[in-house]
Image (cartoon, rainbow, N blue to C red; front, top):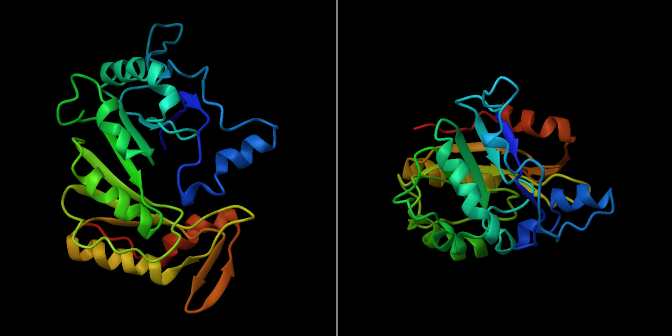
Length: 239
């Protein structure tokens, strides 16, 4: 499953997929302002050691990085250099992060990045056609060794044109969760799968979301069943 590394917390809603952000929902329960970006007490997690002097995070661990913020958010500019140093030092770990800010990536990369660190994946979200048109070409050309597209929450039918290809390691699709979740349609999911198969790009249907439409019928699916139902569809594509 890996280890969650939320080195800073808080974000600003960037695009349509952020409307019902789970971080904002959770913070609201504690009357916490999610728009304030703060460094967390887990900032140094990758280089923390136990009493025996061993790494607290063992070699080979997948680090889910910055999932309560965005690694490339402006307020974190003063901390990011140190974060990259820790990531570089722990090349025995695998770091996975997702951003809605691909336009900031190039200016925020470390000096020794080159074409990318082998142990770092930077994914980009594209939840509707507007964001595909805005982000796909930009993201495709960035110097990142491991790239993945996240269509979650999927808000409408998407057309990637001829933009998909071997540069992308996977497209992940999922609906929206929460009481105010917007509908995800199975036809939209299948449409992305078809494009992935044509481009020979792996496809993963992660979860249905809370309100899932299939063959014109709307299903309300409990949170604990959303990933299970997506898996049962059996439509993942591997190259």
